Length: 238
Image 1 (tube, helix red, strand yellow):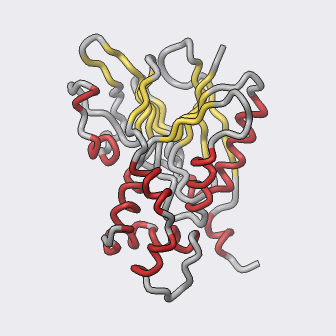
Image 2 (cartoon, rainbow, N blue to C red):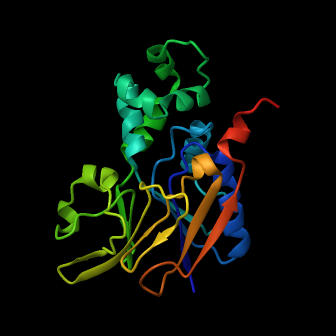
């Protein structure tokens, strides 16, 4: 049995990323696939470190990482092109500080600290990953629209109505949708057709990883819970 693992909405919590990968690899010595569903940056303290780790890829042989684009990668790219009025109120300040920006530094000048290769990496990320049984995406999938005609902005920004059971079924294709984006501190939110793994981890320190059997369609067969410090504890002076 091979497995796929999903990690959602890290938002600058590199500590949770490192802990999650360690737990995943310790528990599965046959290797597998990890799908990151986007929102690696903003709000938490270590966005740069997350991007660098994901760009480097898995360090253990046999593992495959798939990184998808979230709406905060899109916000960051826009911010680095000058749309700071949009980026900074959405956690961009913390991201710039992870690149070495100082308090009081001109924000426009600080964007020059972001390497071009980081922007290009985010730009080139896919929006969806279809493994034949599940569809991984940051925010959601439009019902009744062929996958090759989906609106990428909706895939990275849409919100499912609370309690919606929707998966993706169209033209003979029936896929369980795995996503984040819509934060539920008490999550993950697991439904018949979709699984939402955004647990507000950047703030609470609680990240939940979905574990999927590659041979069995549908939702997760189990989860892995990672506990780290609350963001307020991280902000207190030592």
